[in-house]
Image (cartoon, rainbow, N blue to C red):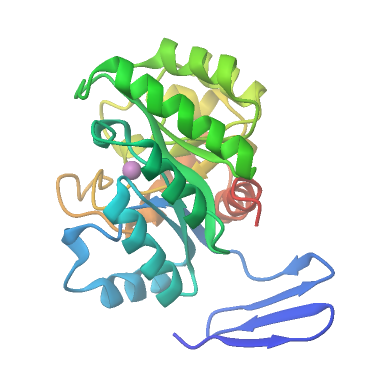
Amino acid sequence: MVFLNCFTRNAKFIIDRDRVVVNFKRRFFYKKMIFDTHTHYDDDAFANDLDEVLQKARENGVGRITNIASDLPSIDKCLELAEKYEQIYCAHGVHPTECGEMTDEDLSAIREKLAHRKVVAVGEIGLDYYWDTPDRDIQRHWFKKQLQLAMEVQKPIVVHSREAAEETFRILEENYDGDGVIHCYSYSAEMAKEYVKRGYFLGVGGVVTYKNARKLVETVEAVPLTSIVLETDCPYLSPDPYRGKRNSSANLPLVVKKIAALKDVSEETVIRQTEENAERLYHL
Ligand code: NI
């Protein structure tokens, strides 16, 4: 992929084969493309063919991507990817299941790395009572610490929450007054509405295409399209009919199709609106 960057006093032009982006005095004019707000391309699953995977995603209409860190080594890998690939942004944080050995020094190291221009969020952070390790107290402690960090640096958060619905909500209510996304949203439609009321986005991916996705389908129907962002969480959670196989951004058109059907709008509308949502989410 060839990007041509030309800077003038007020305008930035990014020209590539698929689209023209003009940012003139903060106004954008460009062809709408899918924004994958949550990937793990630093995962070993992509060690051998990432160039091809990203090329395929591009061919399937995926424009920009945010790659999400889960532990300290992955933070460095995320940065490498964001520096190598123009279309990749990243988020820095420690996943609840990975925070068992975390220290205050680690938090300071993350704070420094958050200053990089392509780091757009703190994440993924949260609570995971499905794997339920490390101790819940440790998970809560680092969740709160990282919420504080996000407020300090004024970046949005990417929240991972599994089987911890009430407590995640309560900790956010009591400890956080910024913005962000509840990634891979898996709770009730009622709770989704509460998050939406508070300005959060909900991450929706392959799960919405599954036969047993009743709760997520209800959620997508219940919240406005302006509060939904697309995500793969790849290499996990491939949409049907690829469930169980390695996921990638190239599969997102299947999720777009499903959401368009549920909301009774065109696929183009879903792509356009969710791309705008992702820009708002990540302050782009
Ligand atoms: Ni993830």
